[in-house]
Length: 151
Image (cartoon, rainbow, N blue to C red; front, top):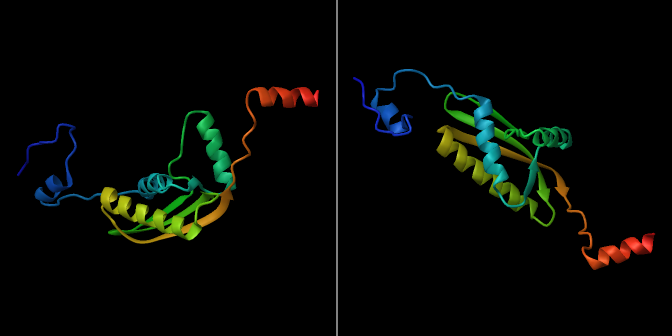
């Protein structure tokens, strides 16, 4: 039996899929899950960036050419009904690290279970570095006076 498409965007909802009798197979790639997890982790306040130093350098090059890798610093292992996620991140200085890891873990659990529809069995968070913002340079007249003093 065929059901009419009631979704104006042209996509079938999960309800429509289950009503269709469940025929067919859905495969969700590790890359798709990693992107969902990466976007969720980046949204947590206190996360400066995801990935190790080398992957962040490669990400800066991608950003310069107008591309981005939402899955950088995220590895997902996808099974039939479950997924495990590993996240490597850099925290912003001043953020309590254990609290940050717990917030990232909760955000990833929620996003993956809601958007991907798989059960998350674990989210491992590795904080590899702490970002310290460079000092703010003086602006205006103070900067001009400093330049004159140097000359």
